[in-house]
Image 1 (cartoon, rainbow, N blue to C red):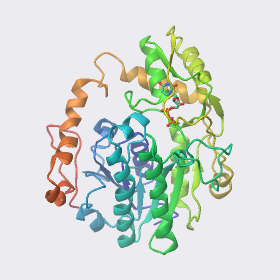
Image 2: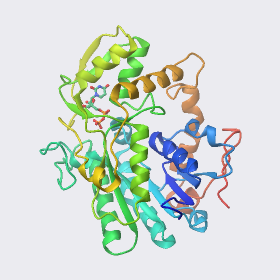
Image 3: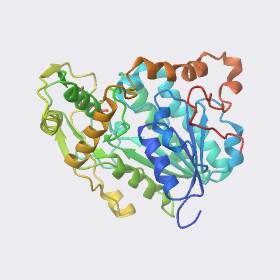
Image 4: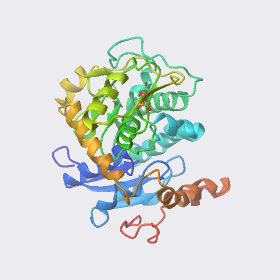
Length: 374
Ligand code: UDP
């Protein structure tokens, strides 16, 4: 490691929205990056621009399975765990797999960090606070989570993952840092992930009805992706271990109805707003207290909501352009389905085969190259 920079970093979930931006940031710093992704929600198109980068390796694997031996051989100095479906419709789509990804997957990656001496950065979530009774949410707050509700697979999974992380830290088994990530938005979000920013922007651009859940008085605080990645990198680069989770998010709070108004104004859309039932256990208020991040990392978000929304709108406009490759299009879904289905279809006794790094089929994507054996 030089000047807190990592020479080789593993990014689990590196094909996802945040993961792919993290891969970019690490490569820009001069690191070699190994990206691990199951493509359950990650997308190859997020990494296409890295296809010819000799410092980038893509390995297709599911972290709930034994990890490819090639990973330990590369001896990463940092392991970033961003591997988990993160939008409510996606993580609720296969709740068992979500829970196992959080718990088994984190354990597999922690063991890798233990055996290689790598620093471990866990992407946790504001969901560990559930529907919070403390506002804004400070790291010392233990949360208010329904352990049996539809969000529990993610909320409780991420809480259990934090437990594992801090047990490894206390036992001196790994140098662990835990980021609690609040709502984040920006380019490379999936149009079909069901989140409020992606839904509202794509609906506004298409002139479709805007779906407002509940009365829109529930609040969130939205952080632009570049700010979030900066915070994550600072946390990973810190010289000393951090004995507490660290909130990363934008403390500017607004309610969902206000977000809708901003998007309508910025897009000039004439879409109607239609009410939909509030989903079960939808948190009423959410805003991070980022005092700890400011003090430890010298970090605070700097991209104003309007600037970030403009960039996000421009990106979705491009995505929705006729002929552009859209995630919701059947063509794209078909391109991604075989890899995901392959991983889940294997018989249980074939688990070692399932997680073996698979050279990308060049017919699937001629421009991506996996170099799992280096
Ligand atoms: N929401 C909404 N319309 C949508 C999608 C979401 O009103 O089309 C609401 C949702 O009920 C929640 C907030 O927007 O109160 C943020 O939802 P999101 O799924 O983006 O993230 P969450 O913070 O709930 O995980």
